[in-house]
Length: 432
Figure (cartoon, rainbow, N blue to C red):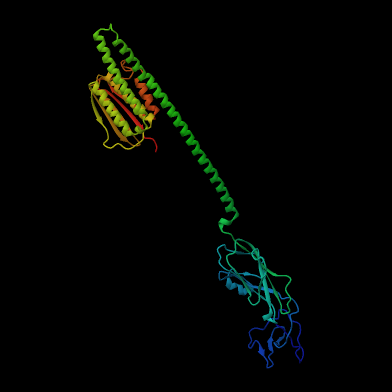
């Protein structure tokens, strides 16, 4: 726009007057004469604008950033302080030195710009680029805005320059710096924390699997040790029990075959050979039952123990009363557990037959939380304390207690003189 001040009867163009402030409070504020000129009174004089005058742009055009709009909300504009009051927190582009900050979840960014020119507006061209995003300048002829969608988090600088109607481009572009804020998972502190947690997770996982591997190795070694102990026990049983019985049977057979042996002694030796053979058969049956892994269940132990007790006490002419649950749970008992339990039961029954002078034995099995209890009670003569009755085996009760403790069980004994003895075994089921 070209501004003139009348200084003579003929109005001549003069240089533009900066900050020419118009009058307020009077009407009309401006007139158009018949020749098309506009007459505007001001506090400093009379401004006359003649649209017919043709001038050229003699230099590069300054570019003005008008608005910055994020998701249809103006966050910055080129306006006065009074005009910005209605926009609340909108930033003044012409004076603000603060960098704009965009939220990470914004959808659309629009930057409006224009050029200050009064001549050949249709010939003005623009080019812009977003430093940090665009590789090359973007050419635009008529559009006066740039639109970007969902820029990655980071720092950016918008640059724009114009070309006047004479083809002269700005050498210095107008810039606007802004930052797109990252999501919290894109921040440096979150990445450091994530890396630290990942490192801790990896270390914990490696430690966990290493511990598992070590536990498996220990379990395998423990199993191998248990197998070795079981082999040693079987060899010992075969040597001590079967070997001794076979040796005695051999000696009795040789005596019975002696031509000088009396008939009564021969019959006695034959009876003893038969008894030893029966004991040998029972011992062999016990060994086979103990080493067979199919018998590693509570049901197998209860069945075999009841059959053995009935047969053993029947031979000794002692009444046997059994009390077992109607339904026995399908729980595993390791080979060493059921073998030691059976040896304790066998030792207890053997002591009853030899020392208790009882005519009835009650055997009861009851299920408790996480295990079971086995109670063996006789109505024999009893005793005040284990050491008070010399007829009881020197190491019988001690062996029973030690065998029970080896399988992490609990052994208790109660005896009343003249009323009998009660032995209680408590065993926990293994963790499965």
